[in-house]
Image (cartoon, rainbow, N blue to C red; front, top):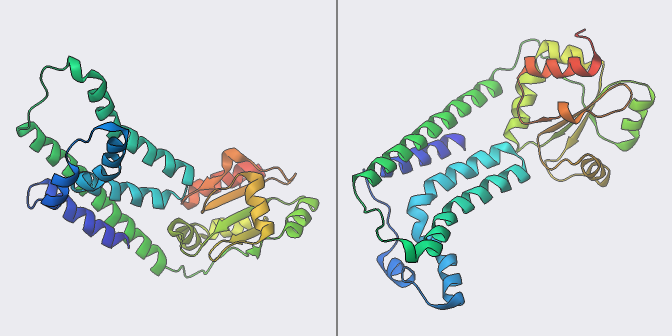
Length: 269
């Protein structure tokens, strides 16, 4: 999927360099490209302007959606898309408010070509980033360590969590899904690291598998601690206190993960 997305973004970047042009159908541009009087007309234009502007904003929106899908954080994704919408709409608001004061607008010319090439370069960089990520994921999936170190996960239940608290053992709760790329990367890289597996042997390791939905018990846990997406890893100390500042959302390399475990246990052993 990442390689396919990278290829699509690279192809869209070529249009920014002038190799070919993406244009909406002429009849569509003529039909909805004219201003219509009244609030209803403005509303209809707002609904359809996305189709007219798609050749320009499509490549960047696709890139942004790929970024949002990897972040696995609905609130951050919402904020990024909201800011994109505000950024696209703000110039129209400014022009509408100051239209009677403007005597001259910038003319189309060479500066627009330069802007398109700069934006195309950004797309190429992002395409290379996706390719590098895909290669890294492939290596992680294919490089199963000889030691076969792994964490002894237990299915999450409220009773198991409370029992762990009563025995004064630190707890790790991994909210995981098979379709979540960072979850799989954590499983194949960080949790298979020998030192990580050894350190987590002193923890009660619980896993909420959200691949096909979650139980009511698990949903209650997510609601209690404000978990909105996967991957999310909760760390509890021996007294049963969760440390929000050490919460993990997304992939974390083994050494940085070990640093957080040290802050929970208070020692590197």
